[in-house]
Length: 167
Image (cartoon, rainbow, N blue to C red; front, side, top):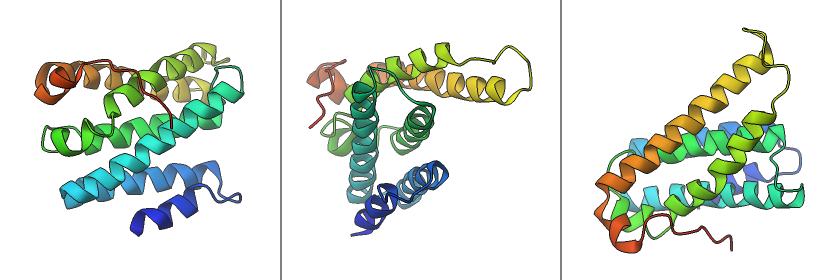
């Protein structure tokens, strides 16, 4: 039921990009704080669905993220890394939700968006700060996937790099 409230807030037509970003951050924090398998599964499922919507949006716009969608995907990747930073919920949430595949699908789109950011040459400019922030998320997500590949037995058994299939 708590996820339903966040879903309604997230996709409300009047929700601003900042509201959507805050919803993702709150969902990630709730999952991290409660450290409960069912809650982590719900929060993970929510973030995977948001990543799926980001991919769907990119497909509608020629396989590219808009700035708003890239920022949302980055916030979502941060939440996923917070939720699944250790192995506590790999078997009962990370693997069944195919989080690994979702990250692998979103990451190239985010990297392509980062390369396309204009006006990021001037150190300290808004574009420069945003680009650096997105680069940090992409770098962390890449390292996170490597960490999971090396440390998650369930991923090795399920097959690393399984392509995420939006439903």
